[in-house]
Image 1 (cartoon, rainbow, N blue to C red):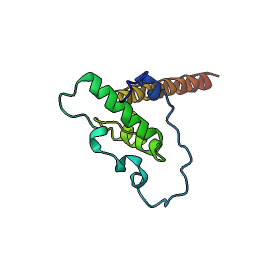
Image 2 (image 1 turned 180 degrees about the vertical axis):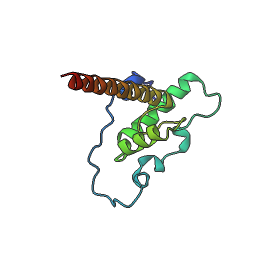
Image 3 (image 1 turned 135 degrees about the vertical axis):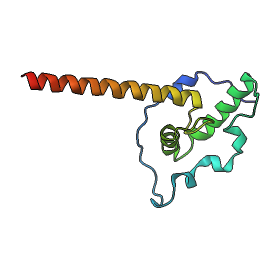
Image 4 (image 1 turned 90 degrees about the vertical axis):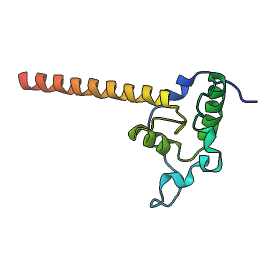
Length: 125
């Protein structure tokens, strides 16, 4: 029986960073090593009118598959850059990806604001 998730935002808090990928053919697309290729797509994408408890259970099971995937980071970045509107990608649900994207946009705005402030200070001094 699948366990309900403890907190979906715990996964979303994982920083997006490039981790070393084991020796693989650099010409091959990242998804050729994705563990999810061996699983049902239904685990990663919601059927229509799925009850909340079933969705949470299914998403947790999909995240467990993702957690052992050698290309999880590449998958997550793909889903964030596209952006993929549905499903579990790189261990994140669509809602979690929206949170990550909002945080990235906010961080980028803060960095730009800080850079402009530094430019004004340098120009004045």
